[in-house]
View 1 (cartoon, helix red, strand yellow):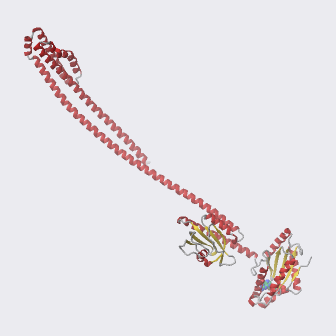
View 2 (spheres, rainbow, N blue to C red; view 1 turned 180 degrees about the vertical axis):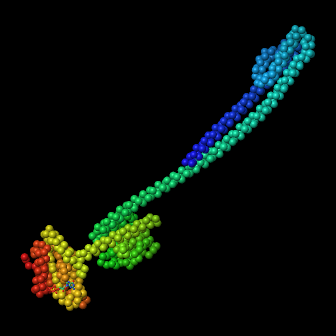
Length: 563
Ligand SMILES: Nc1nc2c(ncn2[C@@H]2O[C@H](COP(=O)(O)OP(=O)(O)OP(=O)(O)O)[C@@H](O)[C@H]2O)c(=O)[nH]1
């Protein structure tokens, strides 16, 4: 704003200086023109006077020639003078400027007229009276006196004119010098004002350039912020989706694909491997997924295989610069994948897994961003995995019997109803085996409750080993166990119950020998819908068969009777 005012002021100053310069030049030129005009007039007037004198001289010379010779030819200059002089004298009088000049010219004109009259007279006498009379008149010196006076006046006038010319020339020179000085001053002032104008304009341009640069910088910052915001929103969305999917998984061990997809989207150029802590073994991590161009990794690893797992802190290494973790080194990691990063998944001081990333950006800033993102996401993922594991644990606790690890009675009741409905729908058989440990009271009484518990755990282990994947074994209560066998008819169920009975009876002394030498169990087997159309009747049939086995001597398998 200030610069704009300065420019306007400078432009106004330039216009004023130029107008002033033009006015001064015009005035000086005008005064010089007047001087030149005056000089020219002076010279012309002098020329007129000289011409009058010359004409009179010529006429006088012709008169002398005529007087001496009497030849009329000599009178030609006189005749010419008679014709031209009156007009020339008139003109000279008319052109006289000042009163003094006019008076002097009047005097010259008068003398010229007197001289002309004297010439006329002498010529007339010569013609009429001859040479002698004329000589008398000439000898009177009247004509000479007039001519001398005339010459003196013309010479004086010439001297005045010369002096005046000198003065005029001096004035013209002074005017020319003044004009030059004024022009020079105007030019210098214009140069200064133009210079100032240029400085102001240059400053203004610089300010505008700086403002434009600042605006550009701000625009770039804004664009960067928008881009950052967009990227962070996208990352947040991906992370939120991944965490939601992890939480929706029935087991933390099913989260491999979800984590691979999430990290693949978050770090597009990087490959990776995801390990989760084995739910059964706190010292082992299982590989659940691999994505991108990740190198082969072991399917299982221990805490000793990874620096990050041992120290519960992320560990970064590149190419061959630092010592690689054993899980990478031992599985063909060749160091070509650029920067690698092991991020342990830790929540509430509990290790739940590990994310191993490879092929991170080579450029330091981009890699730093990737690393921060990976660590932040790993914290969230660890929390989600921890929650999933907690949920699994709670779910397990709610359906599992803590002593034997078999399902509890509540789970059995739910499963029996579900399996009955499925059998009905599929028209497939469903067998139920009820198992009761024989003389268990004697074990407790004889060896103590701890021994009794150990016997129950050992029998549960034998049950787990003997059943199929789809069978469900539960502790129904006390020393009574039940096994639900989908798609299994009574004869098959009886055969498998018999095999289990034999395994229990033939098992070595339980509780490390601090228990009974041998243990047996009685079994009852019933089949749906053969021995009962619903859960209660089916269970009752199998239970009654088991009691019959007890009554018939224990350590045996008894089939439910046909209703
Ligand atoms: N150690 C231990 N004992 C249990 C547990 N649950 C029930 N018992 C005991 O198991 C015994 C069951 O005894 P009974 O019902 O008389 O049957 P039994 O001695 O096995 O005799 P039969 O069934 O007729 O062969 C009781 O003494 C209960 O206290 C348990 O979780 N641990």
